[in-house]
Image 1: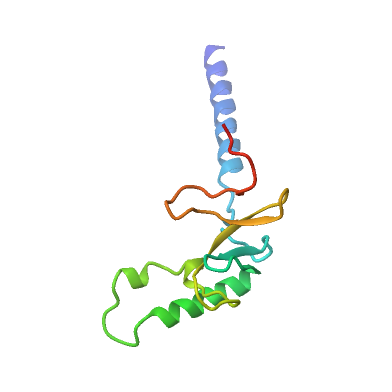
Image 2: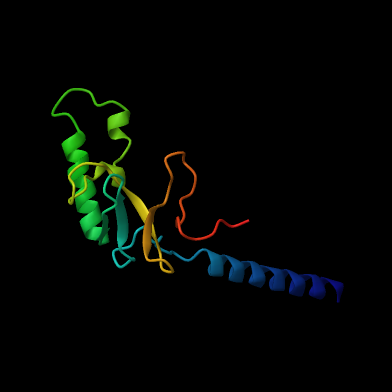
Length: 132
């Protein structure tokens, strides 16, 4: 009888292991960081505070144009030139000057604000009270 119990426990453990492997090893495709049907990407001009909302497709096209415009036409490319374009690589369509930075929106005050301050800290709505 002892041998029969050992075999039945082995079968149960094997069944649980197979179920665990089947549940957690599905062939899942990872979600892209910015899906094509995601919320619009918001950029804010650092000079005139003009905000711009773009779809994912428009954003990637604008970044691609900014990257190709910033690369030299030949020779070696420095690390700074290949570090990848960010929203700051985009120029403001309103004033044509300052760089556009990633922005957030406060629904309460209807204010756009930079997601990152120049010192690197997290941006927040300038009209909301400071959390304590």
